[in-house]
Length: 342
Ligand SMILES: [Zn+2]
Image 1 (cartoon, rainbow, N blue to C red):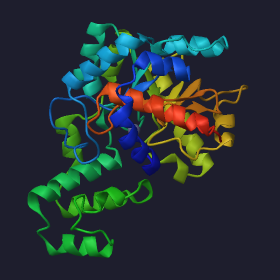
Image 2 (image 1 turned 30 degrees about the horizontal axis):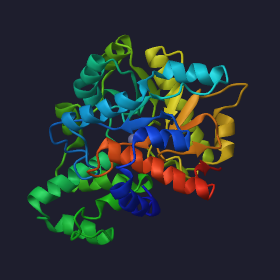
Image 3 (image 1 turned 90 degrees about the vertical axis):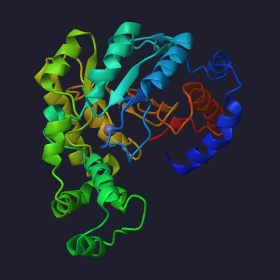
Image 4 (image 1 turned 90 degrees about the horizontal axis):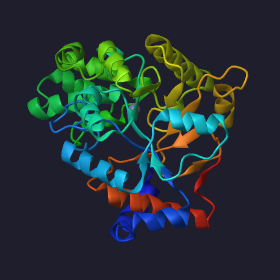
């Protein structure tokens, strides 16, 4: 989340919680929401532990009950139908989604959603399905965990930190500053620390596998792509953005025999240009039917790019997050800034 928004959120969250959701819906006329998460767990998850706070099942169920009180759950098919027929989205409804294709979608989330009769869409990194590899930020979280346990014991590790200008004295050892373009550094450090990501993948199965996804599809869940290996798009040349998008969508579509083509941006769709969307949604041969960002309650000048609301922000409950998103939307609308222009 950008800093301005964080600041506004802190101020707004203390006051907006007292305004009823129904009134906020009326004022903003934003009556369809797209909440999204990564994973829900009652256990500690080492590969996300140092990245963000996750919700437990109790908190998640409370979130769902709030959504159900004010909105009707819809599946992606209803959203696709609205777009195809050029109709507005069904009012007072919500479409739930999950990024990164993690095992907890099967183990924790799906049973709760099936019981409550709520559909959901899960976005997969095509390169990580079946635990073939691990997202570089997850690697960073695992290595931070390892370093916190053992400290920096050997001279080669100390030298490595010095050589790469990373500070061994910060809470994350500087490992969260490592970006997609130099993610190989995390593999280098793992060797020095004698940490085996392959073993972590084999033992913990952080990602969904083929059979689980097939079962989830039979149960009515829908799937989309989330790039091949989770780069931050705004730092990629456009051709590589297109390759990451089109190949991951095609891969997921063919592997699971899907009739729809969905994509959610890894990290953020901030800075993605109209020319990218023109190619992705080329009417002659579209790579995607719909794409999804995570900028909160906002409209997008690209009609087929839907903005979702992250519900993992700090320790706020769903009512506070939702009310704050609405309040922030209202303030931005005064300045005409609730529309993302590309
Ligand atoms: Zn992601």
